[in-house]
Image (tube, rainbow, N blue to C red; front, side, top):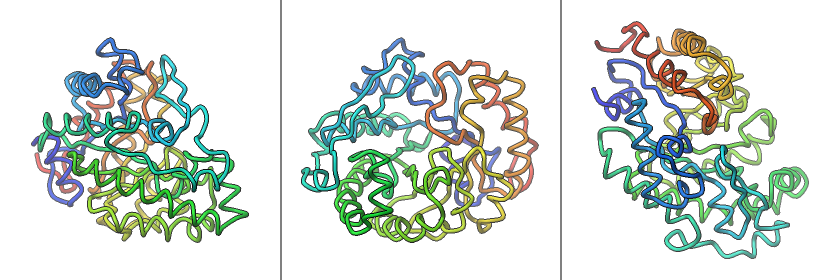
Length: 344
């Protein structure tokens, strides 16, 4: 059973030979190919080579389209900071206020900044891995997207104290987000992951998410015709997890590393897919035996009911993650006893 069929069967509740296993390794391809990060995220061929190297080295059940939100902020006029060991990040958001953000034209996906890189890299991955390994594309969640335009602190203040302005910026930014999501699906992405920071307990309480964000999230997801997964960007999300099943096109959620995944299972209906939930930082600090143990512990709790993908819970794994840890993580699913709906 190849990775594509394994993942699709898991999402659909059909038999699999083993649970799928994901690791977010976008930037990791740079080290494997001897490429600097600026080139990796600016050259579709370099990014494709990096993902090929990751796939050949570790054989995880996904390939990842460029996970680079700085390219979005940059396309609106923001500044990017580049590091040697970290994915690019936003140095300065493009707007200093909601009014400035509302006045900005929406950038062209085909010609502005590094946005075309994401689309061309996705096309390359789809050509290379079509129906062999699923291509996963990651986007900012609709509710947190305005933070890329005015900064997170300003966005939270707007949500709390200027709800009318917040609603206007959500509606304005949704046009771009929907268009980008549609373009990634057209380029060949098999599934979209929305990293909805406003679903994280570390950022917003349940009441704010339910009242200010969830209606908008629902509307945006309804406008995008493809399978979607919601992530809290690594933060705790059990406090809102029960609100996600039934959202348009949402097939699962990536639970945070500090969420009790047994509780996550209790909070969601049987057919809802859970993904997670190993801590990103553990991959660089723990030994390979410990990573293998943590993975098997997670599998023993979450995998028996099916509809489970083993994964890290946040963004890119640290660049200094040892190869032995990635191999132990990948091999853990082969050591997990077959059963509970899987097929040998």
